[in-house]
Amino acid sequence: MPLQSEINKKPADHPEGAERTRSGQFFRPNCDIVEREDEILVLADMPGARGEQIDVRFEDGMLTIHAPVPDRREPEAEYLLCEYGVGDYWRTFQVSEAVDASKISAEYANGVLTLHLPKAESVKPRRIAVATA
Amino acid sequence: MPLRYRGMRHPVAQLRDEMERLLTGFLGQPAAGLWSAEGRGQPAVNLWEQADALTAELEVPGVNSGHIDISVAGGELSIRIERPDLLQEGATYHRRERPVGSFTRTLRLPFEVDGNNVQAELNNGVLTITLPKAEEAKPRKIKVAAASQATQ
Image (cartoon, rainbow over all chains, first blue to last red; front, side):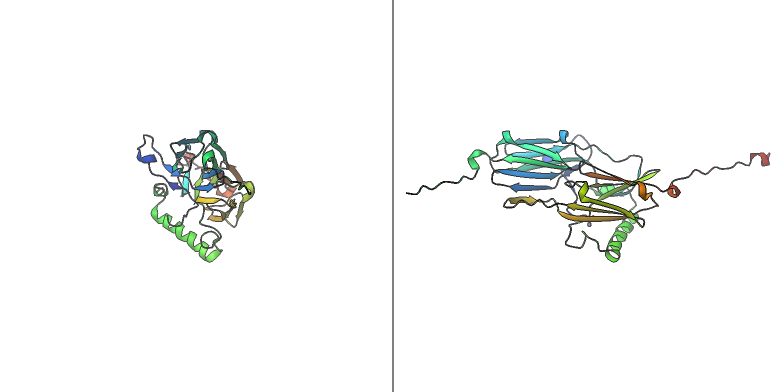
């Protein structure tokens, strides 16, 4: 499929090498990771997911995003083009910065998951006032 | 893996579609998105036919209805999507995979559609466009007249 480029999602491998008991495909959502002064912002393209079903976990510096996506393809219909598959999303990141896990927040709108990972107090940049004599 | 889904169509038909897509983009109109610097690829489409309608579905996360432009003319369905660039000034990008810019896809429709009753719905980043078949394109049941009396 050489004509499709990075606008489209890519299939994911088995999550963390484990085999699954459920059939179906996994997809790796396209992500932006932005570091700001006080937080790390993760944006993930996850069209077709449902906000309340998205599972975000942060454990030992590993951020895992998982969202089940029900198959919405029509079984009876005749497909003229079938260029992408529909399936669950899964992606894991190793977050090296110290993050205040208790303050992680997430929102989902227009098919995009936004995660705010606030930096832990100890690693926030601090402006040191220089005392002048 | 996505090849499995494409496998639903005969490989020769796929090749023909792909060639057609390339040529119409190349010779017909400027293929925004595919060749120009404007975009980074064409959005994938799932297109299926039912008895009375044709449905096109695209995954367009991160856009609202104001960023989508759909038109049906001359037997073609044209979809243009504008993904806003929310570049964070002064922020450091560790990863930047989500494309921004404008993306266009034009599909030749396999039959006449009722252009006045095309409906589009955007739900959680999935755009569904329903194109009802024009009256003349709907399947028709032909009654077979039995000449029962004549054979008697």
